[in-house]
Image 1 (cartoon, rainbow, N blue to C red):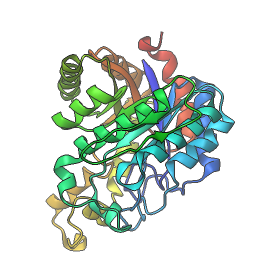
Image 2: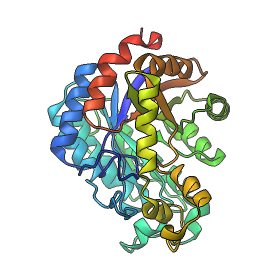
Image 3: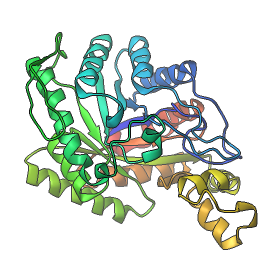
Length: 349
C-alpha cells in the first residue's frame, strides 16, 4: 500500500483549533517534511490549492503558499518521491498548466503529477474576478473533461486542436513534452459525477476517510464500479488524519485536547454560518461545530500498533491503492509515523 502526505502548504495544517500546533507555511518547513518523507520511504507528497482562508482566532488557511512553485522547489531537493501539485481550473488555462507540469516533470526526473480541483468555492475565484458564473456548479466536470483532454493531447502529441463547448484550441503546441508522454492525474470529487470524471480521466481518486470503514468500503465500491464502466484502472487513495500516542489513551487525550480548542469562528465561516454569534451558541451547537474542527477528515487515533492495524484493514478494501496522511505536528509526526507505524504494517511488506 502506498503512503503519502498532505503537506502543510497552509497555516496550521488541517485542524481549526487553538490548541493544535500553530505554524506558518514555508519552503523550509515543507522541505524538511519532504526530506523526512523520502528518508522514511513514503511514496508521494501532495500540496493543495487554497486561495482564501476561514479567518477566526487562528486565521485558519489565511496564509498559503502556491502549489506548483512549491512543488518545483521540492522537486529540486528530492530524488525519489512522487510530487503532486494542485490546480484550481478556473484560475489557469490548460495549455499553461500543461507547460508548467512539463517543466516540473523535467526538474523532478519524471516524478510530477497534478491534482485536478474543478473549483466549487465561489469566493476563492470571485475575489479575483475569475468566477465563471453560476452555470459552473452544474457543468464543472464537463468543463474539467475538456480541460484535461487538452493537456493530455499536448503531453502525448505536442499539439491540441480540440474544439469543445468551453475551449477552442487553434493548433496549440507544446515542446518539450513530459518524459513519459503523460503526467499522472489525481482527483477528489466525492459525488457520482465526480467519480465518473476521475474514472474516465484520472489515475488516482482520493476519497475521504472515516472511522466507519463500511463507509470507506461503500465509497471505494462506487469508484470501482465507475472505473469498470469506464474500462480504466484508477487507484483509490484514502485520506486520514493520524493522531499517534504511546497508548490509545494518550492519543485520545491529544485528540480531545485539540477538539476542545476548536476555532468556532473559522468553523462558522467554513460551514456558511459566518453570521453566527459563536459566543452565544448553545452547548449543543458548539459540540456540533467542534466535530468539524478537522474539516471532517476521518481520524485514526491510537498507539502506533493500533494505527498500523487499522491501516492494514484499509489496505484490504478492494480498490484501495494507498493512504494519504494528515498529521498534527509536521515534520515530527512524519518521522514518528515512518519509524514506528510503517514497520508494523503487514500491507507494507
